[in-house]
Image (cartoon, rainbow, N blue to C red; front, side, top):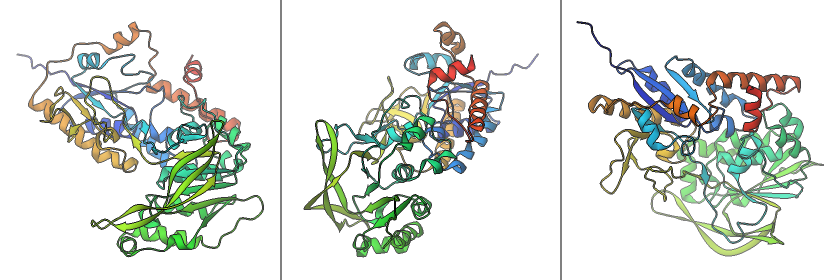
Length: 457
């Protein structure tokens, strides 16, 4: 009697960023359960925030894509780019074509400041600006008026540091990066001279990492400036600086900026602490300034401090503002959603719904920011994705579902969807590198879907 071999478990992963690739690597790296993995993305390009979120002058961080390329080379893996779930294929259709579905769609919106005037022209999220200068097709046509003399950035995480640094650097410094061509052209015309970075609390509570803040002391085109009194630490903040090496180094770096002055045409990057925007000011619908309130720090009883407004207000003139106060996930049609935290409810990666946290379908999972919220760095997604992949495999072994019978290829072909494969992406990658070499740059990104598809023929 011949032995029959069970068909492999068909798995769809939605979102081709770091969490998606780490999950795919975990699923393909085990041998207990035969699997195939189809990794979907709405864009024709893979790698998510590695391509569209990492700053163009931080090329070393992007080298993680070499690991992802090894995963993509596995014959059990397929990339299906240019496919939007909810438009090109529904959730129910995915469940008919796959045994298990894992969502790694990230956090695609941002948090608001919640102050008067936030709708003024000139007020943007840092997310928009980062996507614009990184050549994201959905943001390439954005326009930012860089003719103003001053810009305010609200927030002190690494994204805020990236935005400030890109604005502070000269076009010559950016020419050797893969910044989008349209952004480089616009930045050549920039007249910005003052960049204000506002922190609600003190320097000990800042979320940037030390290499990020140190870079501002090494720029030839801009000078970091601080107010010495704003770097004085209360008792709780001093304890935090003593206990955490990164915090301590950040304080040292900021103090090394005391007394620095700009010369000639150098730009000024002002690190300001214990300030909160209370209103955005404008004329004829355009941003002209930001009203800020001085905060006082008070111990909150949990080893940290809270910011309390003092009623002391002042104004900063500015023609641009970028808020960088956190990302937030967005709902996916048919799936439960926790609007307060901006995540899909889950237990260890298993999507749940209702007060009793029962499984939504028993076949759907999450990983990455849509699972845990927008925290950590690229590498943080690996253990998160592994946990979800292991839960998926354990469930499949314990309660096998009826084999999926749908045909995703036939479904997409019938709708005229031009699926971009990983081989297609490699052709686009080669074209971008070729265009970059011709211009003396590392890469010139194709920044629209139509340009990408036209290049593929």
